Length: 504
View 1 (spheres, rainbow, N blue to C red):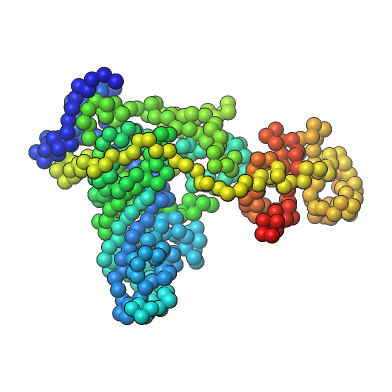
View 2: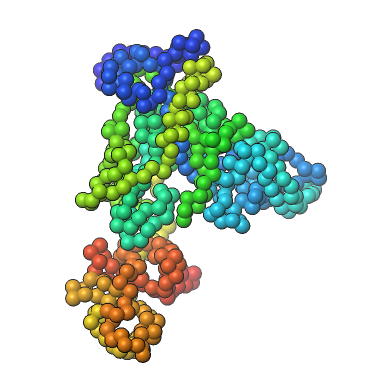
């Protein structure tokens, strides 16, 4: 990089905000300005760029202080609307996480919904139990509270606002229900999160202005960046922030509990970070267009920690509503709200222009050289190929039902894979299918086989196979390779034997 031509200070920008002559643009406006005038002239002209995002942020929650009862209680366990909160800190403090599920309503209600209900001023049923001590003799309490009854209600989110978020698709044969939404089989759709050029951390990817103490828009009020977020991974463009603010000052317009089908509950959080344009380098990153923002499209059909990258995509492609995946055009849908992201950026812009919001210089900038480490696991996770039966009895569609009945009687098992002349799986027959077919006019296995077979891949973890068996209410699956060639069969008996060996 050449010599810096534009130099501003946050103190100087705050003076202009105080006088009412600071120039503030949203990130979308900044993109157009940099295209028109270049980064140097844009840096001279603009003082602050505002950003915004509104998306599900599962790593969110609230610290609550209930005050002391009479006689006092040291809460050992506490529930808010039947959603358990963590109480292992002090007598009447608790932390309720957005992803915690109701013990009576399951996926329909969780911590995110409790947080929204608190912000809306609704009554919340509080129930607590304790073991009792000399100084805290009470052992149980039940009552209703509102946010106004609490001494403190502090939104503290350990991980918010990823710098970028991978897009998702599914190569598998089954529809998947994930934190990335519903993913249709055979690359049937693509989902993504993030607000494109409005995404806060993407505007200052080198963290030259963002750090501990940065004042931000959080849930409809002013909050702060408390620390780097958990899983902060800037070396891979996946930085995150931990955020904090007073729940009592927030708005339900920017905090909404949600249920993600088949995954659980979460909290949609409205968040915006002001980016002070202190030099042309910041102007350049703050003005980068959607065609310059790239992320990876991951295959969630492979249930591994390191999911395969299908291809690299730009946000310009994602925002077009369709992209090409494996030679076919696939529809794309966002999981975050661009309407509310724009609204947040505009609201933050208005606060600054009116002198209601000043920039807070970071006490310490976010680190730029950390990398996210996976869990250190003891032992090897068994895969389908490790415990499957490799010598599989098979049949063809032209074989008779009578021959299959003999196989079941002689071999004493319940699943018979049906393959074509090339050994590729084309269906499955169970002992129940044969029992039902005996005595009918059906003669060939082609008349009774199930053509749409639930399968497992050779490298699929056993935990995922067990989940698949449970979800479909079946007792076994054929194991196939990437080309659909039959490699083995795996049953609930095999998994039970593995569990028994582990416990010995």
